[in-house]
Length: 111
Length: 117
Image (tube, rainbow over the protein chains, first blue to last red):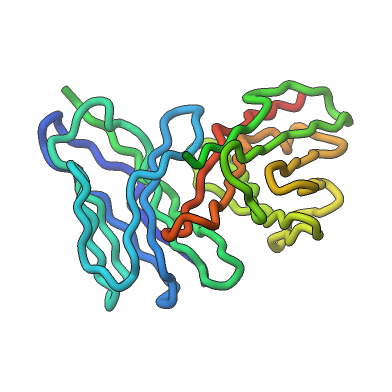
């Protein structure tokens, strides 16, 4: 199937690290993405990782990829209240170039 | 770079009328655009792939006569919701792929909130 799965909610305190997890199904996916969506808005690309990479770091964001387990995670260091949003992981299907999204994880950051 | 403009941001229409939503790539040419639908607190569901100069490819379960897609130029795709009904109320988001970006970069529009009354 084409299921991409994420946990639905995560609550952290300001200054802590947040880790959002995702599992995907298509082992041939070449790119995996993390998007951020604020209320009533479109999607903002946060970061992406190519399938031959294990890790990618971009300022406060760290992406880990375990291709064997088809597991992707996004770590946000020093989480701020402005990071509160819904985070979607997505895999790129080689066939048709479609992006398949997970259900989204709602991150709540408490002061 | 890679900006996608979507209009309108929100629209309210009466049942039975049609609504057109526009998706434009502002600084790149997009041979392929995608249309998604999102229900509250849910994920994005891919509705169709819009191909410039040819027919759109619809996902299973999406009525092509209900959701008309036109991609007449390399920078514009439109989605027309025909004979809209309250169950068509949703958040519609388009995205476009910039072929010059090596990460297969997909840029999303800001979405259109459709309410059918």
